[in-house]
Image (cartoon, rainbow, N blue to C red; front, side, top):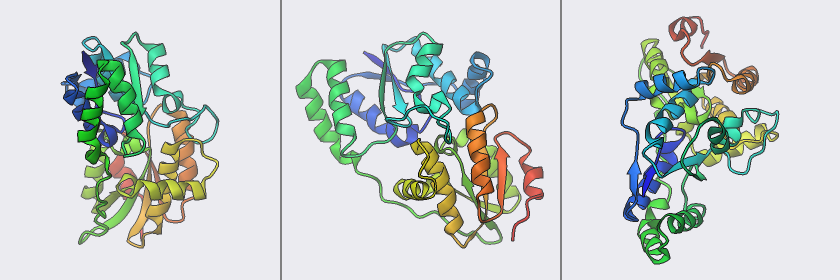
Length: 288
């Protein structure tokens, strides 16, 4: 049994645990071997009208799909339905596996929430483990050994100030902010401009969701609540002099939502599109 695990779209929140769990069950886990740049280029050829984040994801999926008996994909927004608020008009954010299956011929897809915790994960692990091994006793033994790894890691406060630099927050889709390959040029441009970036995803997820719900309770997707909540929490910090609201090209729903976040900001907000001329935009950005 070979199970493919694409290592993007919030993989850092769930992937390592599932990889270890399946390997302990004797299942061979396949992960992409190409560079992220090669995957991005491959995805762009297959889906030129989609955003870079999705192109990267598609490139990673298609590399391993033909050699996999099944794929494990994240449910980015469990229980969500299509809508018109925030990014809920983006079908990829609402139901990633279904949209992917309609676009490409793929092996069977198994879906898990894009995070792990002691309450949420075990039922999925039991169901998937038994479906893939037909050995309930083995699944239970392995799950018992892996249960301690489901406890959340201790929160590490981000560095809010660096000498000689102004601190700015970066708010955006958490799946984008956690993809260092895509945002690295922006981070480099910020350092060159003597700006110290703090990402919305570096804050406690529970607090960003709570803040997003309080400020924008009409939003339908958890990723949007994290986006809005991250911006709100960053603004509350006295050290943060301004907020960068990051969006992607070819993502209409996300861009409209990002514009709303920028307009409602109480501190200087800079709306940036991934891949734009960061240096020029930062130079023209008025900060305290």
